[in-house]
Length: 84
Image (tube, rainbow, N blue to C red; front, side):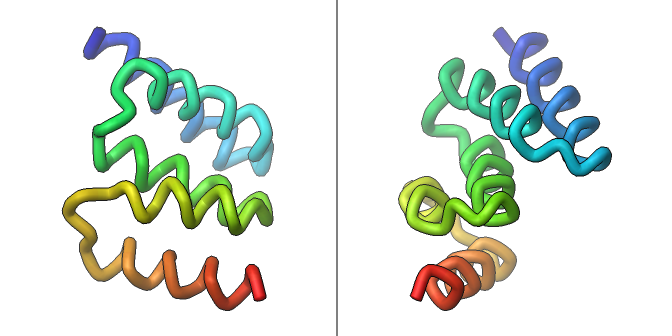
């Protein structure tokens, strides 16, 4: 399970660096299906959704993060501003 999580996260990051957000979201979503309570996955998924302009979906994901650091709180504020 941990290998699959790492694999999906790695692929998502590769696609993100090549500005292929749809594929990046697909692969991080696969990691999310393996562990939907992992703050790291939620943060990455929320970030990618926000980058893709899917602000309402990003907010739903980001608000599920249990331990919100400054970067997560900043991303939530950014998504809220862009949603409106």
